[in-house]
Length: 75
Image 1 (tube, one colour):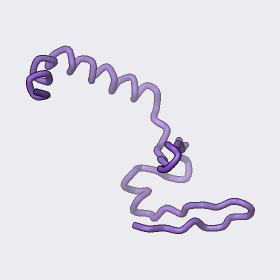
Image 2 (cartoon, one colour; image 1 turned 180 degrees about the horizontal axis):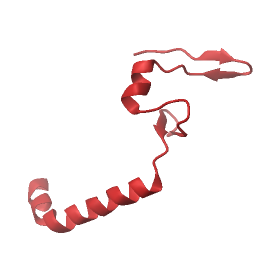
Image 3 (tube, rainbow, N blue to C red; image 1 turned 120 degrees about the horizontal axis):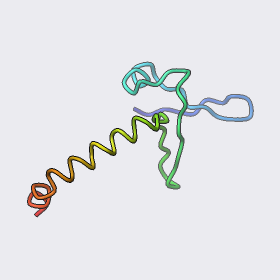
């Protein structure tokens, strides 16, 4: 999909289609994090700290339990 920026006052805006918003779970109340590597602009919903911590704990447990299997698969 290719889009153009829309002029909004002295700024520019990127209008996102409804299907993109629905697929990502973003609505008008969602806080967004915007970052760039100098070439690419990344827009993502701000994740709840509890959710991120829960995911990290799960990843840590998975790594402890399956570290050997992961090591063999990486070879």
